[in-house]
Image (cartoon, rainbow, N blue to C red; front, side, top):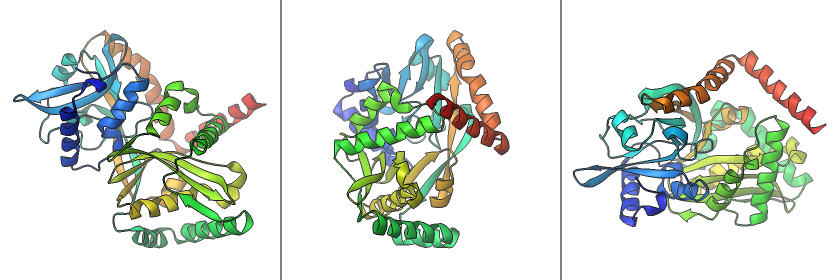
Length: 354
């Protein structure tokens, strides 16, 4: 059991080799660099190193809470979670938790094909993806076939934005700190406007994003993309990229330009730039949204739940998370109720602002 900073370079390289051998897309949230940065803002971060025959055969990054309640590294913001194991290695889950001094291990975006934890999932969710493996033109062809009106309208709005506001410019990897601050301000305002918890009001998340913006590793690079019009930012996105996957994380836009759908234009330009960089997949994460339905080419399963072993810590985990999770699941499964809940959240947000 090690703090992430205590891993040797050899262990980190072995971690990367195991990820390279995985059959799942190489998501940057599953790389050692992400765990390293989380550890700098979350002091309870740990990595369990599994050995087989004297050789490191797996890694389980996690955070440890009261009574040994464990959680996936970066739970609440990380969009891909799980253990990094040698193919075919499936240790006994209770023995692993005991060795880690954990009573439970909670996850909410468990990666598909995680044989160790999927049997303990309580819910399956859908993550929406954009496949640009064959290039951006091939992706546009898919959009023309499945949603021709959407593509035509979005491109027309991009042209109108250029005519009425000023030259449209896209930067895939913007390094200007002010642009990141602007994105975070837009996103915070969006959270408040829709009645949702403002993630950037949590200091550790703001610090995490700021540090990841400075992370430049081949399989985990913080990437700020900005759409400009007339010299000013109108939409932006911050995410992480590997050589194969762009993990879409925090998109937002200036509401003053909403009629031009700058967020949709931004995603098209991100897909184009990613394809040019040789990235084959944009992962937009779980959670239904109209813009995801319009942009997606496919879906991937992700899982929510917890592996536990008997004890007070497991009972505490159940009491702390299960009632709320089940209530959320009940609402999500009923579209009319979900719509009412969304309207109620927005109404409450307006009352708080008034």
